[in-house]
Image (cartoon, rainbow over all chains, first blue to last red; front, side, top):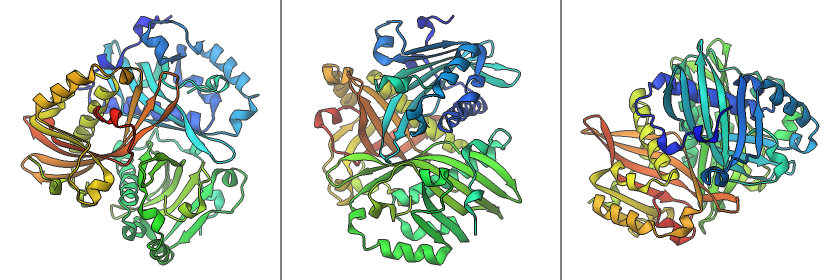
Length: 173
Length: 173
Length: 173
């Protein structure tokens, strides 16, 4: 299990020496990831993670204060699939259009085919009446494994600056 | 004329096998397109389309329900130029600063030098008093033709999640 | 000192003939720049500029009307460092999470290893209560110098469409 201390801070990450091709591949991973979420194809969501991958959502303040309390903590495909099954019954979410916009990734080579990647993320929700608003501003802090040319998340920590309706936070960001 | 059924869903689009150079070229097309709109150079807008190109704006709900009603439907350069001439008289628009932000494109090769491209888009408007707000969240679903190295829209369908002041929607997004 | 007339308008900038590698390098410059600001590492901020570099923030309306009044004007590393020292005492800023999102750069080769670069920018602030809102929509209009493979801003003009709480504008955007 990853510890909180392993979450890389953006300030630690330096992209300067990362080959351009690698940056593109890592950027594409999160681009496909957010496209999956915007299309609400939640069945495909766990496959972005390694079998024992970790997904968690942290309020920024908790992370900065070193507090371990997360808003959501899922470890491994089985827990992720269970969560996805629950979410099918949430009617409200079905009526909301979701759009993720990403910044460019900051990358650090951890060695052994593992990369730390930090990416700004903005999520805009539009309700069934056609009103759009910022649902969440924050950041992905990922540990990505490159195994046999396939990239998967060993860990995806979503640091959220926005604390919105808790029921919505039960959905992957 | 394109039929509604031909609008590709994001979920159908797979970028995995698209050469990187092609992705860059297609991304640049929409980047230039939104720069043209942000600079309000509407005279140059029709040239992004093929001579008989199609431009339309759909509310997301209509598209999902299979309803054909669009908010705006323009076919061919002549109709587009007429629309641009009308817009010169809309004073309100001149006072609004427009900024488009794009996601990364999802691409499917349709064959014959034609590509389906889906791109998230966020449009922010700032009024003359300096207040900024989300004008529109949505998506471009494009059919792009590559002829002689020049990329043009055979069809650009703007799927809008946001239903805002109708007078503004008369402007290209 | 740069004159206002030297600020390139977006409409003048054409990226068509810019080599892809150069576009990537110039995009990375602003990506690192905004990462520095989001991480609030203001001590590192002046190093993005040439020794006598110019930083200024213009309201869009002043720029369009040809008025020279800027909201902030800093010339050279010494002035920038002084500003950063002042900002350490602003408590309010420390409690706000900042996220910059960038558009793709429009580039014009000015010759002599100097490039004009225009980039859309959206800044989202989240306060300590977890509310997020658009702090600023606007544009970077940069003159970038490539010396010995290192890119630095000779001039960064931030054109802001949004006129928000003045105290916040004292911080670099």
